[in-house]
Length: 160
Image (cartoon, rainbow, N blue to C red; front, side, top):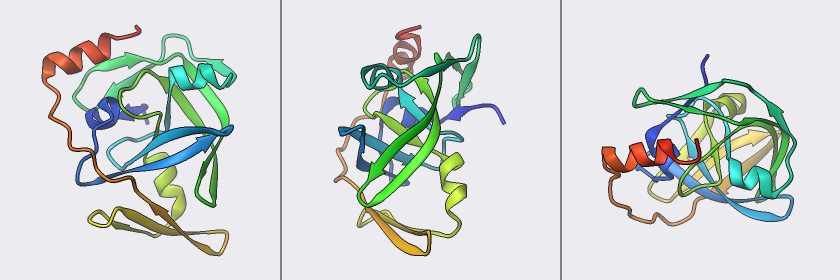
């Protein structure tokens, strides 16, 4: 499966079917968007660089944006240790420029959880990990305006 990210995730926009959660990587606070519209897990290239994450090169690789466009990604970061509350995820993430969030967790992570319960009104999700129930609380929604196609084009061309 080609790496795919939703337009909303790329722009960091929270929708009625996504949840933003506060997390930490190497003690740095990060904003995590949980998005079933994205196929893979992503980390903002600036965060990866700031945290000195080793970037495994991925020459001429591209991420497909759900709108049909493509963006280059600078590489893969392996074994990113992301803490969200008591839950810790070790995952590979693709490093790309994004707006509004630091990490996107997509279907790559969600499908590994098994049965998941989402409550988009109260902004939380529940699942079981290692025999324990995990409940991740979302950050209150920040209502943003819809990004125009011109604005999205600028975002896609940024840092390429």
